[in-house]
Length: 107
Image (cartoon, rainbow, N blue to C red):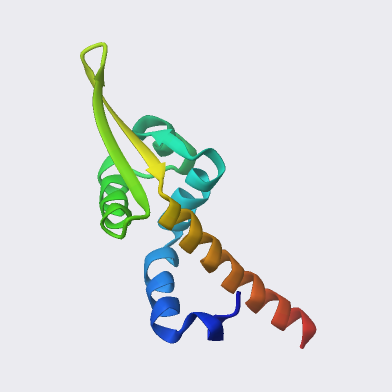
């Protein structure tokens, strides 16, 4: 999917959301696993609790991640799941990066 076919506004939005290294790691983990709990993702990508919460809030506000909170054995458990929009847009962003790499290799 080319950068030109998406439109500048869409590309700018994808870059704004996904270019942050922590969100790249979060979305990559969710694309691989679909659903991850709070503790597991902290261990996987090495963010602090507050930092993870801030990034997840932004991803949730953009409909890229669904956040589910429940209690398991009287303890709170937060689960994160990538949405279809999240899968589609993150794959678009990956395609943009791949296109850039390909163009650079060819030049």
